Structures are given as structure tokens and as C-alpha cells.
Amino acid sequence: MGENPICQAISFILMGKGKIMEQIKILVVEDEMIIAADISMTLEEHNYDVIGMAPRGETALEIVKENAPDMVLMDINLKGKLDGIETALLMQEIRPTPIIFLTANVDQASFERAKAVQPYAFLGKPFKATELIRAIELAISRLGSERDMNPENTEKPDSPEDGLALLGDRIFVRFKDRLVKVSITDIIYATAESNYCRIVTAERDHMLAITLKAFEERLSAPQFMRIHRSHLVNLEKLDEVGEVYLRLGKHQVPYSKSYKEELYRRLRTV
Image (cartoon, rainbow, N blue to C red; front, side):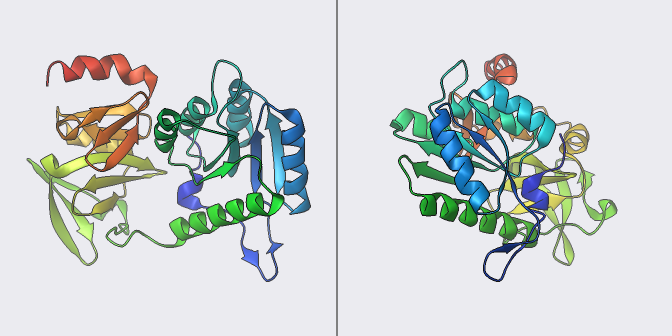
């Protein structure tokens, strides 16, 4: 899956009056090449590294596989077989990548689809250079926070040994300075974060020092199903199946088309 830019965040630091220690790598996905060139010029003027300009989703996916951008500026209304939302979802299967959507207009249905990507910003066309740079800077700030701070109710374990203890219908996880019980039936979904696994419950999140695959193998609970390379969900918590996402209470979790047939089969039997 490659390195997770959301877990490791960005390898540069903004200092002083915008001085950049290392350049952030940005991919521009835009089918209007004049607009793409204008965006790229603006980014380069502000010391960002434009690693490519892709007019089609398929091209963008190949660039992501080969070059691992730190951030992607994505036009929602791409021409071709894949629109920007479909392209962004497929990117997350290659490696979690921060997305800023660019759009002249978007209907409500497309907006709901786009939310499943969990974009870092929506930027309406036409936009000014200052608006573009501010959107990127806000995304960078968010990435830095995700790197340096755990969520309020999330505790990262110190070592794999204290990450998970499985006992029947419950697990015991490290939270602050103690082990706490989490009932397996209370887990809404689990998601991969680099070599860690984050489990989400209604009360709080817990970070486990094992991979999602290892957690899935040790869990062995029939109500759980892998619906994405990075997500494992509790089907008993499922409220809605959208075109590209599942809704579990207040949570929206993207799922891959490759799991769709198995998902519908499982739903007929649960």
C-alpha cells in the first residue's frame, strides 16, 4: 500500500515567512490543459513541486502509483471513463492521498458521492491564485495536526505487545495508562493507518499496533466484512448502502466496487 501520507503527514515544515524546508509534491488532475497549466504555474511560483498534469483519471492513477504525490488537486467533472470522484476513490486504494476537489458546479448527488472521499477542501471555479494557495495551506495545516496529535479520545499504543488482547466476545486495548474492554459488537468499523489499525466505536476510537489484516484474522467475527483495502465494517451497524460508500450511523465509509457483489450476497444472509 505504500507509505501513508495521512499518518506520516508531510515531510516538510513551514517556517518564518513561508520558507519551505522541503517541497510538497502536488499532482494536478484537470482536463482543461490551459487551466492545468495556469494552476501549475501558480503552484511553482509558491515553491510547490508539480509532479504532473493529468487530463484523465486513468493517467492520474498511473502517476500516483509511480510518484506518490503528497496532495492531489482534482477536477470533479473529468472527461473520460472516470470522473474525478471515481478517480479519487481508486487513488485511496493505491495509497491514502489528500484530495482537494476543483469544480465549476456540482449537483447534490455528486456532492454526496464526493463526501465519501473525505476531501480536504472544495474549491469552486473560477478561483483566484490566493484562494488556491490558502486551500493548500489549510490542507497542510490539517495534515500537520494529524501527524502531531492523536484525536482527543485516541491513544496510540507504545508497542505491538500492548496493542491487543482478544478474549471471547471482547478485546482489551491500551487507553492512556490502562487496559479497557471493548465489546466486539460495539466496533462500528476498523480502518488501516499505515502499520496501525484504528477501531471506531460510538464512545471513542482506539489505535492498535497491528495491521488491519492481522486484526481481521484475529477477530474472526462473521458480522465483519472487508469492503475496501483499508476498511473493515460491522455489517450489523450498517444503515445505508450508497453508490460508493456505506453509512454506519454518523460514519460514511467508502467501499470498493470489487467488493460490491460479495457485500450484497452477505446482506441477503445477515
